[in-house]
Length: 235
Image 1 (tube, helix red, strand yellow):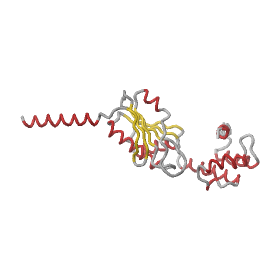
Image 2 (cartoon, one colour):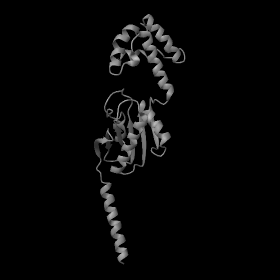
Image 3 (tube, rainbow, N blue to C red):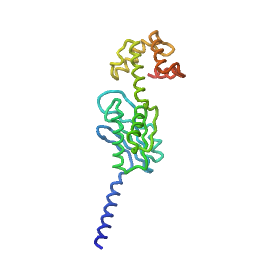
Image 4 (tube, rainbow, N blue to C red):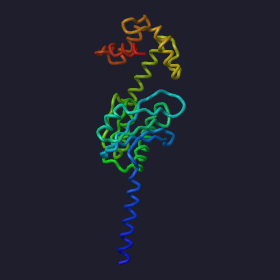
């Protein structure tokens, strides 16, 4: 009889403790994990789904990364799903670090709100690299991924960017490869643009640069210049 009473008491205490642990109220939360800022949004009618957002590359520089809102956050939460995002522990291109920041954020979410029914990682640009890498290296962490304009071509993508910038530096005579951001952006939008011109209005140096880029891209592919015009016009 005494053993039965002890067992019932232990079960009651376990349930009470579990109820208190799981009672983290829905709402908006912010904080810092391992040097990375984060936010979490849990709607009042949370249905157990979680979408983790990984933003894209924001350039090099000191300090932690920038915490950003998810482009689909309102859509997700209006349908009863929770969402969360990490600003990352640093700037720069370190998907190997940043995928760990998202995994730490998921673990923190589980500790605060309980295990989601499923978790999807949503990444843009470099965030897409993070998403794909996590699916490969940690296949049990997420049940799926949404990748927008993801940098998933690996070394080939980096080769393209370096070759493009090297050609821009060669034909303009400007030290683009040795100039960090934000000074790089200023240099491109002032001296480089003046030296090279724009699509349809290239200088002689600009025409040579465009010829090189055409072959780097695989030839005179459709919409090659059309895609470049609004990029420059919207600088």
